Length: 166
Image 1: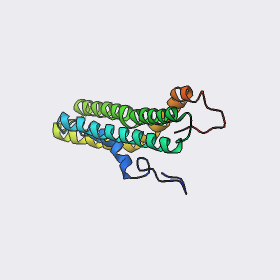
Image 2: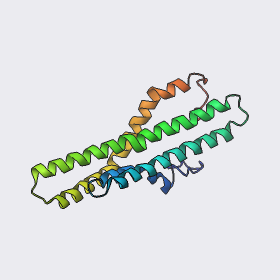
Image 3: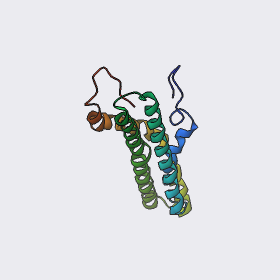
Image 4: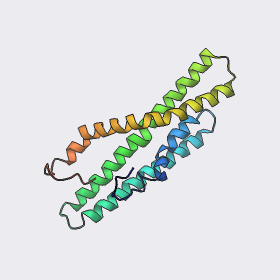
């Protein structure tokens, strides 16, 4: 959430942030709903990621209006936000919940005598309950991954005392 006195970020500090988790909810319900619903949840999450990246690009454009590196700063803001959000909000958690739910449904089929509808609802409950548990470790891992790779590429031309444009 926003730091004390800092501007509130619509995409990170409000309920809008939860739209980035739509695909995890879709994956949790995969056993119960048509595939089109799951794909629609990915559409919602991708729209969120794209909107956040566009917002950060617009903010970078405002902050760097007179900078000779304006285009590069805007590009970095958009790319960094899009890649981070795509990994941390869509790809990694979506895959994680998908595999967790698939394993859960499989194991319940092998280890219990519960009827299929009960197993499907239990799988959905497992997926939904895992979402809050996986968010922070995935976010931190994606930060580490980007700090160790992509962010090194676009910080090459910045002086050590200059803040990142993102």
